[in-house]
Image (cartoon, rainbow over all chains, first blue to last red):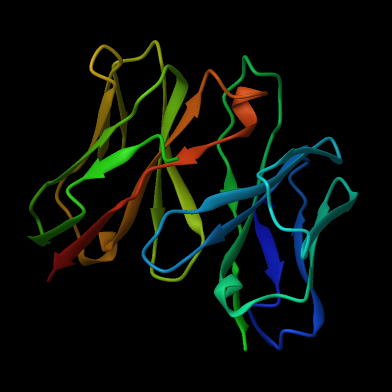
Length: 116
Length: 115
């Protein structure tokens, strides 16, 4: 299984809602990532989990809360979002080996988020 | 800030022609990767070239890397309508903490292949 799955595919939420995005991989990868991508822009890194521990937080606002319950799952909890947070949210994973190895990233199809 | 800059920003060609996209970056790297993204979808890894390699081939793809000029090119030969997508280079800067974990993406080239 060389697939990263993301649910839901589309999400519409109000600014007072709490919702969660889910990402799953069964490739035995030990690094998992959340990216945010606005239209016609490249993906921007939000968070990196390495061996289930948060290793990089790119100064993301606290209304985005990541969680890695186990090595196969990555969640992104959303609360009190703003309309400007509307974007495509991409999850990715990689082997997460030592720095001397070179890791390609496998991306999920993304969740299209609209904040009203 | 972005590490990679692709040019051109947009490229339109006819089926069967070759497409060349360029990427420039600013700092030392471990490797450079190219990804493809169909509209509104996830990214697909195409090819990775290490900093000590100069050229790499994969099917109809040819990637070159010139570390002295801090630039890379992606050549797609005999293009097909299905190659229509955005193409991003991504670098793995040696200066980042845990460098292999963090990719920095360029702005991308939008390729349109007309049937």
